[in-house]
Amino acid sequence: MTNHQKNYLYSLQLNHSRRVKKYKMKFPRSELITIISGIESIERENRFLLWRLIEYSILILRWFQHYFFGKPLINYSIGKYQLKLNLILSNQIIDYKINKKQIITPHKITIRVLLRIISLSNKYSCIEGILKSKFDFIWNNLQTTQIEELSLFYSRNIEFKGDFHYFSILKILYDQEFGRTFEEASNFS
Image 1 (cartoon, rainbow, N blue to C red):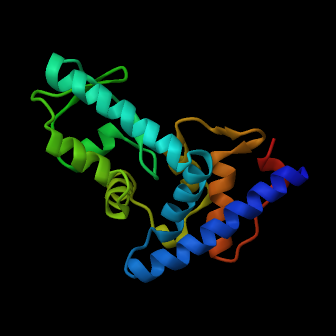
Image 2 (tube, helix red, strand yellow):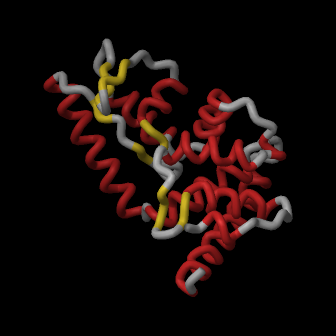
């Protein structure tokens, strides 16, 4: 592992540790704190606030085309957890169909619903609800295969950053919280 990679991991681990402490105070009964904090740490490291503001602007422009010209929305990932629009819509029980990356709704999405979607993309309760509905895991005792399954579902792309994989980083962050060691060598190439 290069010094750059070590520094990157160290930074992620520090941010993750701070988030876990914050979330434990805010959501003391949640079983998903470690995994959600790991996801947020990874996503925030790669999509700073300015990038998320650009994402929201593009979503609003696309919503404008949807609302006024009948064009479908695009299934973007938005917010600090990078949630796909279809997952947020499902969580809110809003009817839709997907055709490739297009989201087709039987009714126009109102500005109120759009603002709710944007708000939910940053809500802990939204990502928690989505993950609980998709996976029947014991969240405080995830196995390697479950973290890998979750990583594939969440990132849709196993490649993450250089030699790192989303799965490898999420596993390191998860294991850090439970004092486990991580088999580094085989998971970074």
